[in-house]
Amino acid sequence: MSVVLELPEALRGELKDPLGPIYTDAEELLADAGEPVVCVGDVVTYHLLQAGYHPSVALVDGKTKREAVDPEIRDAIEGFDRHVEVANPAAGLSEELLELLAAGIEAGATTLVEVHGEEDLAALPAVLATPEGGSVVYGQPDEGMVLTHVDAATKQAVRELLDRFDGDHDAAYAALRVA
Image 1 (tube, rainbow, N blue to C red):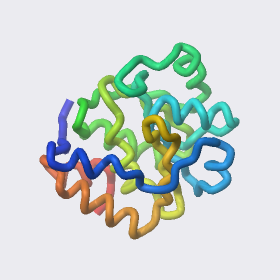
Image 2 (cartoon, rainbow, N blue to C red):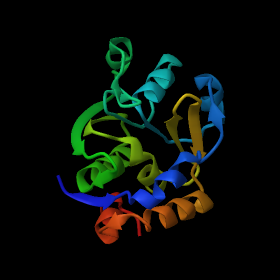
Image 3 (spheres, helix red, strand yellow):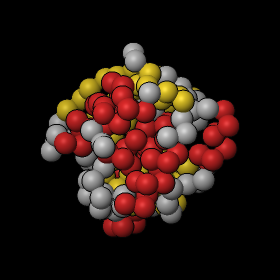
Image 4 (cartoon, rainbow, N blue to C red):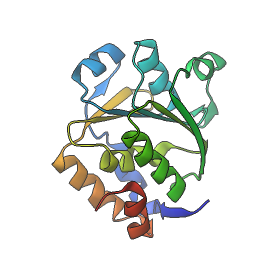
């Protein structure tokens, strides 16, 4: 596993603020979402699937709040056109995860990315890889699902945040296929 970006301790607090409105109803969220939708997290993916919707890309790690998800949630995450696996460390982003994220968005088929390790930070590069007009959905612990509308301003804000991570930014952006 080649880790290209790592979250510095000083930035952890900044990631607590959601990148969009918080929803507790998946159908309401989907009514406001643009295409494609990239989903990060087991519980969020489960809720979208329960609402009858398969996101273009879903990244899951079998955990919620550092604990294993209930078997009901784990077993319900199915029905994707493609299923790939990748290793990714806590507080980091591997080059392989970034490549699979970009490839999944470009695939034109639904893709489930099963992460061995942790997928929490994947919402940030997902914003960069998702075309403008699309959406990134991730969980806000004990609050609900965050809907991030991808536009030029959101991409710029996320890029500025990722630029403050430690690591090889050129390799990370190349893996995401962004300039």
